[in-house]
Length: 405
Ligand SMILES: Cc1ncc(COP(=O)(O)O)c(C=O)c1O
Image (cartoon, rainbow, N blue to C red; front, side, top):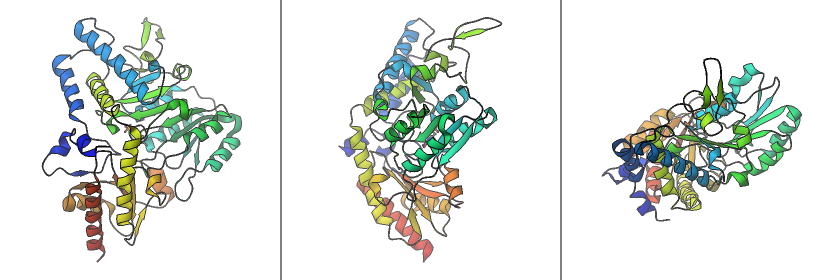
């Protein structure tokens, strides 16, 4: 892909002395078209969708409908009504976990590499009788399909939900979703996929994955903050009790009772983030001009440069498989006897390289491995260059050499 041309679209990267932004797993940058779409909403069309029938109202209603369709297309879903706008992936997962009607003893299976957003909402259901079981990954953090199959078999008829991270924000490792779905469906379990780190980086086809529910966040894929999505089969979404009911969700309400609308409205309580939805459309329009395979290839190319460039340092260990191709755009580094936060600050001070240091909301994995301070995570996107990856390597090596002299 033409990285230089793509990169030009992002104002923060055009600035003189722009930082090397390697914190993309947290959130990506936004292109000018997204910023313009948000500005256009507030200055030209500042109204509310699905309610007002004046021309501003009608215009934003059409934008919401179009954007819902484009979101569906981005993940290979055929029915746009099955896409729910949420504030973020965390909200999407909470909607599922808190919206299902549980039976005492229901089992939910996740993995040991889940973001807290795909852990805590299930743990919260313990008071409803839900038992959470966690499948341990292999020693190089790849998904252990055999252990998963065994966990499903042990749960048997009690297995109600399987909820797995598609691509881990800890290490970039992708799991074989389609295979896991086949196994889980043998037990009639509902399969939810946390796609927060996959939808921005690799092609997604929910039909091919075979999952029942899929959550993601737009701020990790060139869009604005405060917009996420939950896709799911109509019959499952329609069973969910809204965690945010009220305006827009009901057909009718009296002082005594209410009746909920069908999806998507029933799960989208209150006025939406319309400026964000306008920005989302612009982000999807841009992503639609590219092949997501090219994004993934570019990111792995950079990850190889980073992984090979720092691998010789003593006390440095990259989380996940040795082969960078199995870690997408994430290079997550553990540092023996060095203060991770300090190294993170120095990366900025010495080389203006922006990385993330800490637990990355995957506390359970670090806890299980007896690591308190987490890792230094460099996460790239398709607008990052090979030169930036080399500067990352030089900066990192200079800092580690300096601290370990
Ligand atoms: C794998 C994964 N799941 C869920 C989330 C939560 O996303 P959000 O903060 O958009 O709700 C993140 C955020 O980093 C993530 O990386």
